[in-house]
Structure formats: structure tokens, C-alpha cells
Length: 259
Image (cartoon, rainbow, N blue to C red; front, side):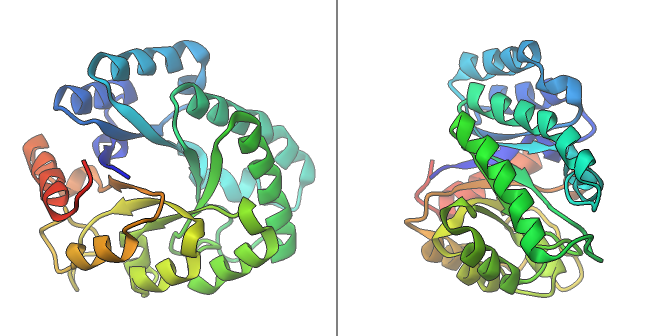
């Protein structure tokens, strides 16, 4: 387990520039948010690998930009479109493997859903099979207004898919779903493999850690022992300077035993 920062925090900064900024700031664990299909090529992947190698930075996960397109690409009623989309997910998985990342993140279908859950789980199982070819996980995130916006969905997904079911817990999305992170944590169980960290108040669902009311000490105690990295993921409007972001990272490191 490690604490890191997602390049998504700097969007729309170019992905390689955001990664360089984090590595030069001393970050030893990162999540890379891929912002375009051209960023999945072997040449671009090698560029990112070179940036990380210069500072010994580990890539925990790949978060594809196409999360917002998944209802149309992967989970529509038109099977051919799903099949046409699989090569892109091969590219994500290959990229993750070449960067020694553990997983790629998906959001899944949006409400109202396009298909019955059983068919959704069958499509996800195809993605999980692709992931296995590259030695990585395809992990479902809890996201408001998407299929994973209730804890019960993750319970059913585990029952349907067994060990193929892998999950990402996002704190801000839990709040937006009007649930606590612990509701999702209980439902995800030991299928949880990745965590997106942020803080919040009653007025704001996404703040830098340490700026809100969330009890990170308790959260770290309750997730201790899980095979998860903790990745700080907020939006560019949630901090004024890079130092603000790095200070939040230091706050997280000081609250947990991770490095």
C-alpha cells in the first residue's frame, strides 16, 4: 500500500507534463489519467515510463478518459459497438502492464441502465478476461448516477463474478451517492483494490484532504491490511497552487503509515 496523487488533478494539463510535475515534486506513487487514445500508443507509454524511471516513481493505476463514454461504447444494446471498443481496452491494459500498474478503472453504465445486470456482468467479465491477459485488474468504481452508485450493486457483482470482481472506492463519489465510504467499503470487502481520496463538508463534496470533516485516521485504520493504494484525486478547481496539493499529500502520509 502507498499514498500517491493522480495526474487527473491537473486536467487539462498535458498528461506527460502533469506526470513530470508530480515526479519532480518527489512523488513515488501516481495514477495516470489517460486523456486521449493517442496516449495509449507504445511510443507514448515508453515516454511516460521514462519519466517515471528517472525518479523511481511507481504507477499504481490507469484511469481512461473513456469512462464517460462507456455507456455508449461498452454497455449499449448494440453488441457490435461493444466488440469494436475492445481493442481500445486492450490498449489500456497493455499500457498498464508496460507501466507495471495494477489496474485500469471503469465507471460502467449510467442510469437509466441500458441492460439487465446479468448482461452487464457478462460484458464486465469480458473486460476482466482482457485484463488477465496482461496481468492486471479491470476495476469498477463507485460513481454517482452510474451502475455502481449503491453498495448493493457491488454485493451483487461479487456474487455474480467472484474473483473477477474488483473495485475502486472513491470517497467524494460516496458522498455524492448520499452514502458513507464505509457503506461501500463493507459491500466491496476484499475485492477492493484501489482508493481515491478527497475530503468534504456538508457544503462541498470534494476538497483537499485535511480541509474538510472526514476522519482519515479512522478510514486508514479500517482499510489497513487491504491490498490497496491510496490516491489523492481532486479537480483542478479544488486547489490554488501545487504546494496546496502537495501539502494535502503530506497530511495523508502523516495520517497513515504508508509511504
